[in-house]
Image 1 (cartoon, protein in one colour):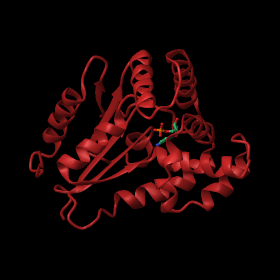
Image 2 (cartoon, helix red, strand yellow):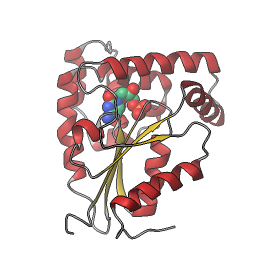
Image 3 (cartoon, protein in one colour):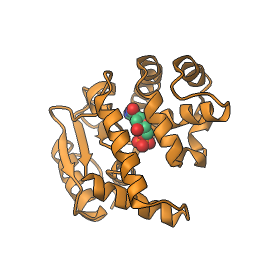
Image 4 (cartoon, helix red, strand yellow):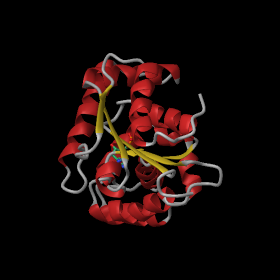
Amino acid sequence: MDKTSFIIITVDGPAGAGKGTLAARLAQIYSLDFLDTGLLYRAVALKMLESGEDFNDKEAALRAVLLLNSDDLINPSLRNEAIGSGASIIAVFPEVRSALLAFQRNFASNPSPGKQGVILDGRDIGLVILPEAPCKIFVTASPEVRAERRLKELHQKKIYSTFELILEDMEERDTRDRMRKISPLRPAKDAFILDTTGLNLQDVVEKASFFVDSIYPQAHKNQ
Ligand code: DC
């Protein structure tokens, strides 16, 4: 696989902007290996919760990072809202971030046979993890729209919550992710900013694919 045909796409953005859904769809269209990097932070938080640790305890977070293995990334409990908030708390520790950096870069440079490349979604992929990636997408949406989408998702899973609770949690998480000193959430200079407020999934995928095609015109596509 030569460098020009090897696709590397980064998808960053705040909680609930639709990056995971978009990244999964692009992975399918362009035959890419997909890593949802939020799962790494969530898996650390889940390990801490299971052993009764405080999310603010940096040493405990680092111990949990060292125990991580790829099986930890498929636990359905990772999607719980409490784990999402815990993940955002432990994500402020620079030592935790650097311990997870190698895993992410290693994933990006070793796609499975038959894949055209990789796609990673998270908060700092375009800016810190893979700054050389040619194709960077930053997905946003208004907090209200993101909270509404999250509420729908939870209702589908029969999890009870309210719009107000989700919006409050989301704004708290956004502030923490944007204000942290190391790798704060913000778009890379060369990122394509995709505001999904008022767009449906099909529109979002269309706009993103148009951008990917402009960077990788030779890419093979599955429709
Ligand atoms: O994308 P998510 O909701 O699964 O992420 C959970 C938290 O993990 C998020 O609030 C901040 C942290 N995170 C991060 O700091 N950097 C990433 N690349 C991915 C997630």
